[in-house]
Image (cartoon, rainbow, N blue to C red; front, side, top):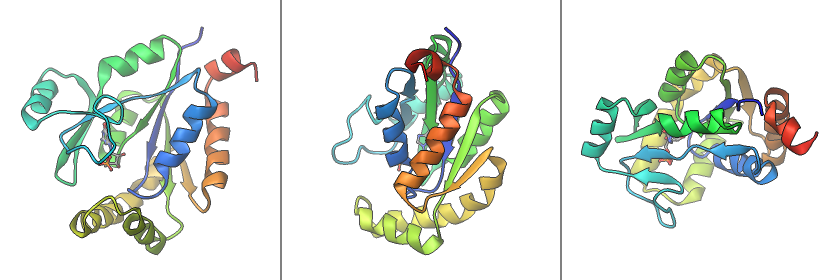
Length: 195
Ligand code: 5GP
């Protein structure tokens, strides 16, 4: 069995990353896994510890940074987020492709440490569309939405540091493009699904 490939997916909050990512896991569940991150943010309604994130407090997070437990970590909207290193390495070694859905600072760290990773940035069709989607989602307060929008403004110019930039006009169109990129770079998917 070949080793897995690491995919890094970024884009502003509300751009649709989560939806296309879930479709990839559904279609290729035997060979692609999601890396569950640690965060100091509070769980949203319906989020489960160990499924969406490992929800930990700041002290524990900082202790784990000191132990070098993270492949990358970053602060976003006042909370810390990080990718547990060992789990990712184990999955890659055991022949699974791994998808990280992370913000740009962390993505830059991963690109440096793991230069063979495949990086994808999803852009909104326009800033206005992003704002509508983020407000329409209704999961965050106005203050949090404002903070995320201003963060998106600073993230968008970094899109050209990624190997691929995709504009999310429609979820199905974007999924087709992600799927194509996935099939191009993964080696295990061809072994597992014979395609
Ligand atoms: P949310 O709070 O909406 O779940 O995530 C906020 C942002 O943090 C999103 O852009 C998400 O991709 C990013 N994020 C989630 N996990 C990680 C991580 O482990 N590392 C980094 N650098 N960003 C993360």
